[in-house]
Length: 342
Ligand code: WQD
Image 1 (cartoon, rainbow, N blue to C red):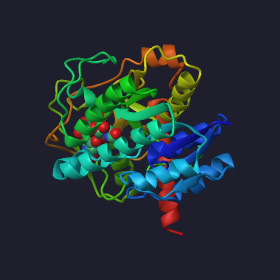
Image 2 (cartoon, rainbow, N blue to C red; image 1 turned 90 degrees about the vertical axis):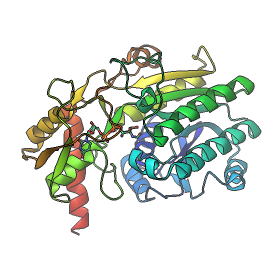
Image 3 (cartoon, rainbow, N blue to C red; image 1 turned 120 degrees about the vertical axis):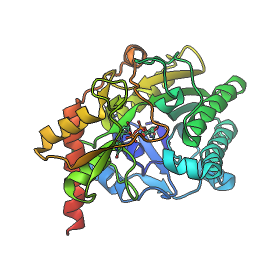
Image 4 (cartoon, helix red, strand yellow; image 1 turned 135 degrees about the vertical axis):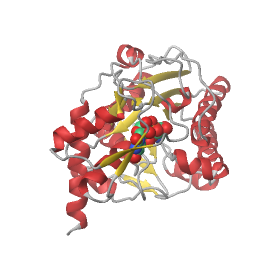
């Protein structure tokens, strides 16, 4: 059984990916300093899979602590690297904190890959690297544009650092560019736990619907789209998770043609903010209290994926519809409220 190190394993996408890895025959350990997450999420992973996952409570920016993990686990055969700060807004306020954390942790992991001969590396990237594309759908060959935020810039720099590093080492890497991950595991045992007021659309919708937020804003309805609101490619977090398992197997089976391959993870469908809200209202039978506000700085007008490469080479096929995404997100919000009231 191959052992995989998942960094950021207590996070939203990390925890969902651990579930998928365990259900597909991998052994998993996590490294997460819980600066933006809670170890309790691994209890949810255990409820789903029946398996305990050990989390190493370390800061990956500390090289000695990171090396110690590899010394204690000489049988790590692959890494999936999620651990990073990911708030666009916060990155604008604290760029140096983002550069130090997101790049420092990557440097240390790549150094350990070399020192401990771990040559399978899957990196959590983002469609944010495309900036504001001239058109959609975007393919993996769509030119990268200047990032709209320091967060996006750390993803672009991280991709470049990995692409340069694999040329000088035995590391075989895959960069997975997520579009907009939303929803929760269908078991409702794990889901997204935003810290503070949610910046992202779907948690803002569900928190407004459940009353945590009194009202939400639609950031602009004067864009050149079907209904004037921005368009995105929303993708269920469990579909994203399964792509990581497929990416690992792709590398383990040496199906990769080059040392660093890039894959888009989106459904290939674009939905506007207002269409997402309407879908939520339909599944939850809950009219949403929102107003149309001004545009949000840095927002991309429209972006959605061409996901043919992921389908053809990884054998990946998104299973969840937009209704499923809204239903599972709503179920999770209801569960969080239930637990809060206990
Ligand atoms: C989606 C749309 C908003 C909240 C970011 C990162 C990306 C990834 C996902 C980390 C936009 C609108 C939102 C609200 C709204 N993060 N919106 N009212 O900006 O596409 O992507 O988060 O990996 O890398 O860039 O996602 O969910 O913030 O916004 O109208 O209260 O919803 O304007 O058009 P985004 P989002």
